[in-house]
Length: 212
Image (spheres, rainbow, N blue to C red):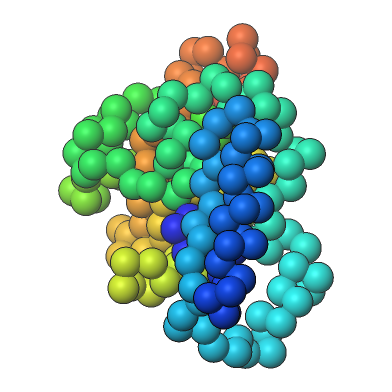
């Protein structure tokens, strides 16, 4: 769920180092791939505020939570390397490189992981930022938002509500006082209006009968 939430094992005393290394070496032999666990002496540790004590007990669907029962491994297998890195590791694609940046055909945009409907072309606009921009999601239940303190900034991260895919960030500089949802192309799959019925999204056809 992003670089700020890496899995790690940290020791306080030098004598504990050998125990950690021995444990990780044992687990590595059992794992089919290289394990991604950082290990080093603890530093920069401080007591978190009360709100973050036992955070997952208080917020079972919070931003640190990934419900592995909700996603089939096969859904991850279908992702390209870039799609996986962006949706699961919260990386960001190079600006102006995404296939939906300068793309404005009628249709809907779904989560590339599980097909959850997230945005529609009716709310897409050219922001010039280098990533697809939307003024709002298809509905507020489609996304979840979290504070993001990475890269020395304070931003609002946007994730899909069902697959918990990292999508991008929300900003307050959209057209006519709206939001700007700055979204990675690789986190999305576009379904043209003419294919909605065949792909099982016929309920969204009515959106394109409405006048702006």
